[in-house]
Image (cartoon, rainbow, N blue to C red; front, side, top):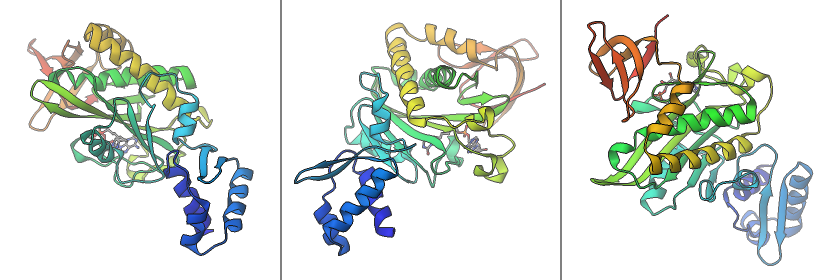
Length: 325
Ligand code: BTX
C-alpha cells in the first residue's frame, strides 16, 4: 500500500499532467497490470481518473479534496483560481506562492495544500493547519495598485470571505480588524497579506488565507482550543471545501475589481457592515505601545481610528485588538 499511496500522491500533485503507468511500474519494479489494478481501486474509492492512451493517468476528481479539478468544477471567475498549484503537504503555501510570483506566475494563481507543517501568521507566529481539515491557501494577484494601497487587500479579502461563508454555509461571521474572522467570539479564519513591489507599483500581492472548516476540537493544538473554532463545530456538518474556495475566489475577484476601479469607499461600507470592532471599547496592542479607546471605524487608507480618552483620534496601522466588555 505504500506504493499505492505514492501513486495517489503523484496523481494529486501532477496538477493535470499525465502520470505514465509504464514509468511508474518500472520505477517500483512492478508490472503495468499491478498499476492498472491500483487505478481501478482508486476509482472504486470515488476518484475519477482519466486514462489517456500512450500518455498515462490524470486525476480529474476525488472525494473531499481541494485539488485543481474539484475547485475548478465550481469556479465562476475570470482569472482567480484558473491555475491551481496543489499539494498534499507543504511547509507553507505562502513561501511557494512568493517563489511562483517571483518567477512570473499569472494573476489569480492559487497555491493550496491539504496540510501545512510550518503555517505562519503575522510576525512569524505559527498557524495551525491540520491535514485535510481546513483551507490553507495563498492567492497571487497582480492588481494595478500603489504599494501603500496593498494593505487594504486584507480588508477586501475579509469581506469576500464573510460573504462566501454566508452564501455557502449560511452562518454570519464578523470581522475583527485587521485580519481575523470570528464566529461567536472565536477565530475561524486568519489572513496574511504580503507584498512584492517596486517603489511606485505593486508587482504581486500574496493573500494567505487560513480557514478552520471540518475540525473537531481535538484537531486543534491544546493551546488554541479556547480561541479557535471551525465551521463544523458551529454547524455540525462537513463543508465542501472546494466549493467554498470557488465562492471566496468569486467574491474576491469582484471586490478587488471594485477596489481598483472605485477606490476604498465601497469596500469600507461593506467592511463596516460586518465589523465587530467599530463602536467598541478596545485595547490595541502594538509592538512598542498599547493604546486604549473607542474604535470609531476605518479610514480611507484602511487604518483603524481610535478615539482616545483625552478626545484625540489616532489612526492605527496594525495591532492585535482586544475588545473590552
Ligand atoms: P495572526 O498572527 O493574526 O494569528 C496567529 C495566532 O492565531 C497564533 O499566534 C495563534 O494564537 C492563533 N492560531 C494559530 N492557528 C490557528 C488556527 N488554525 N485557528 C485559529 N487561531 C489560530 C493570522 O495571523 C494569519 C494566518 C494566515 C494563515 C494562512 S494559511 C495559508 C497561508 N500560508 C501560511 O503559512 N499562512 C497563510
